[in-house]
Image (tube, helix red, strand yellow):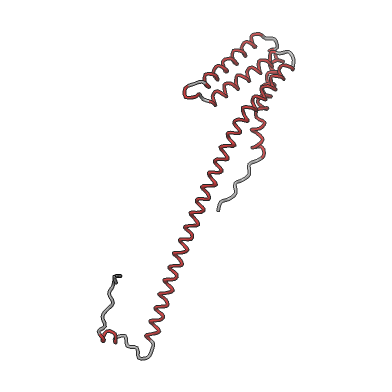
Length: 201
């Protein structure tokens, strides 16, 4: 018997949907915290973040155009890191909330755009897997039904043979009990024995 699979918790479905917003919000909060601790108008800190963001973007470009079509996961990770560093740098350097919030909104939209593409691919793969699993399950069920019918036919044939043998034995025993029955009469009459195998013309 196949037991029903437990339904996943609603947090399992909700977590991937809020992950992009949580990630960009975390970067924004850390950038503003950095701003409050002395990063505001710090040219050195801004230059460092620009260099790091540019380095991550360059690594993403190399990963995307690499040999064999590139590594999509590595390229996506590098570009996401570059965007996070840029957002953190602007949030730390700017003296107000307008520009950081604008970049946070843009980064969140881009993150959801990238995630939506991944979600569509995952959903398509999951649907194809479920369809393949259903087809295989139906094939196995069909084979099991055929085998069950075959086994049932064999059992019925065995029962029919046993019933025939029992009826034959009963008939022989009944004939042996009839008055005047002499089992040696056939032998004394010298009747020929039936051949073991008869050939059909």
